Length: 142
Image 1 (spheres, rainbow, N blue to C red):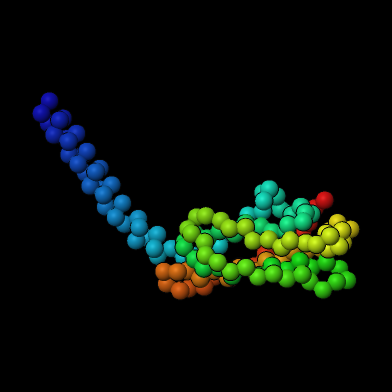
Image 2 (image 1 turned 135 degrees about the vertical axis):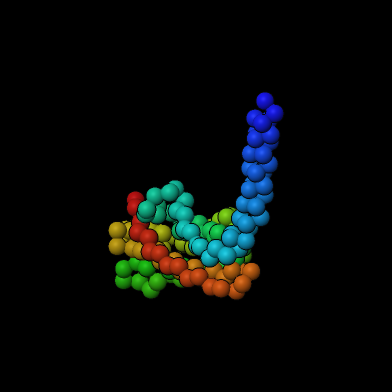
């Protein structure tokens, strides 16, 4: 009985010790992990819906400063461009967007199969200053 009790106590102490070592190693490996940028559509689908506010969600895996360049390309017109700058906390998202006026919205409704929304995100990791650039192009749906 005494041997079983001491064996159980030894296993419990070893498990707690390994848990403390694992907890102290985890933050160091998280700091070494590179910055990753994620894109999110408002409804989770591959194409964007034709609306007055055209935009997507942008998130980072670390605290970062971002510059988001957006471009709406429609046939036979000049592209509509916008730039948004700001900071994003780790594992949260921001939603930059372009607001269209009435003529642009009507033209987008007519030409949505041939129109594209291009986005370029330049994220700078606050802790070490490394930059990550990610681009994506979205189509539209009715």
